Length: 247
Image 1 (tube, rainbow, N blue to C red):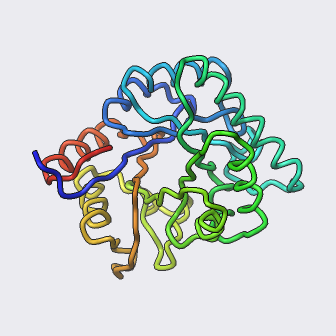
Image 2 (cartoon, rainbow, N blue to C red):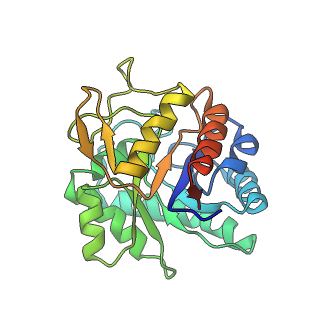
């Protein structure tokens, strides 16, 4: 088959759900929790080995050091302490990755840290300094039009624009709060329509049914969504059937 378009499919994994074996066949990259919000040596090792088995690109998924709130609240922490924590988290994962004869592909911040870096320059700069602190070139998974993506470009960091397959959007490209009932898209057909529009038209329909431009290189399906496996399987096969290559 001659493919016209391509997309990367990623998922946040190693977060205690234990469903990675079922998700990996339908992923082209993954983001592994590395101790900030959850994750330890054992969980990282298991997921790295699964990624190796299925030839899935490996990324670090560091967070505010806050297991109590699963990294989903902004932590009052100095830039230096945040930098040290993030570097330590990524190093822990990178050591496991290199021991398996593999290499780390990217960094994708988790939860509140990810959302804060969309608009907060100070936080964005800390994350970018973490990326630059590693000798190997690491990509950054970040949202289109975000502050962190714009700053990354100026620092010669390769940005992979990320969209969310299973989340609804506001018109400013922020995600609908998880506290609201319409935050998640769990119907697999609706997830596919959402992603297909992103890839084919470079647009999304927001929660208010307004069309907004959104460029994506990768789409995320959250590994902790109850039916993540069926969503991923349906998405994978239907994108391929529509001449879109997963890579």
